[in-house]
Amino acid sequence: MNWNRWSAFFCLTGLALFIPAIFVPAMLVANAIDGPRWYSVWSGIREFYRSGEYFLAGLIACFSLAFPLVKFSLGLLCATGRRFLSPARRQTIVTLTSWTAKYSMLDVLVIAMLILLVKVNEYVRILPSLGLYLFSAAILL
Image (cartoon, rainbow, N blue to C red; front, side, top):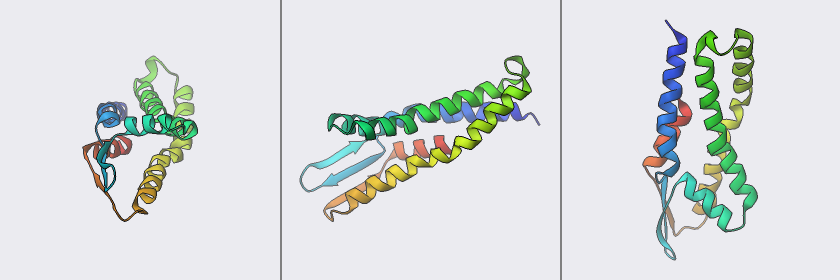
């Protein structure tokens, strides 16, 4: 069994799901005042930035956009075999990405906190959408 091919397959499939998952609406938030509004990862980052929450916008952009893209790229680089990287260099990259894997769960924490903040108001309804499922599948891959 060639593990490099499987690694490349999972990285490419995850990347193919991840890119549209950023822009496809992840949830519908409806309340009595503003009515229904669709939110994607990208629109959520933009909303935080527009409202002056630069730290939150940067944090979510870092861990929801940049971090997964870097991990997919490093996974693809490691899957190329010995042509581009020595086994020692590949082992270093794999160790580093394994060590940073715990930060991938920050997305789940952010989404849970946002839902909790929105759910506090009993007049608000949140419905998951395709973007949430694409994003989840990409992160799992």
